[in-house]
Image 1: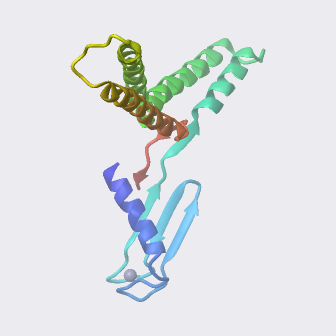
Image 2: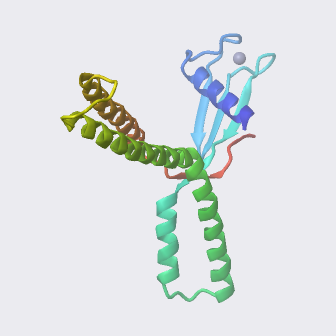
Image 3: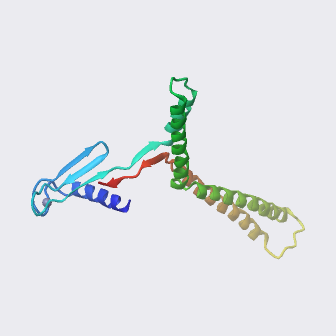
Length: 187
Ligand SMILES: [Zn+2]
């Protein structure tokens, strides 16, 4: 896979760096067909750099799930054994897809952040209600000045709000629902 990305970079580097090969001065050729990229520097003898890359293939998870459900609901004339094997294939793709989506979108991390935020919210509420009690207590005899208590009360709000904002920013990134079904390679 590393080599794949290397070559993919090389392909676009060549594409963006002039029409002629730097060493043999021939015209470069680029072809993009059926998911295959081919490059040739155009040279025939000493300098004849060329390579082909098969691009990774992706499908959309939700589309696949939709197709799968359609397929299950349809009464078709397919042989039961064919139907079973198709269902099995689709299920495997979907299972693989779920794993990839969780990984690609850092979903475990997101869940952790939400639960951290909820913990913080509970703790903040408890602490703020204690602070409010003291602030509103006319016979308050604590060692900390009441103005400090008020400051503390507001700073807790700020901390909570900052955390909330971070969480929202994280969720503004749309979920990538693409599943890689074929790894790209250099051919
Ligand atoms: Zn060349």
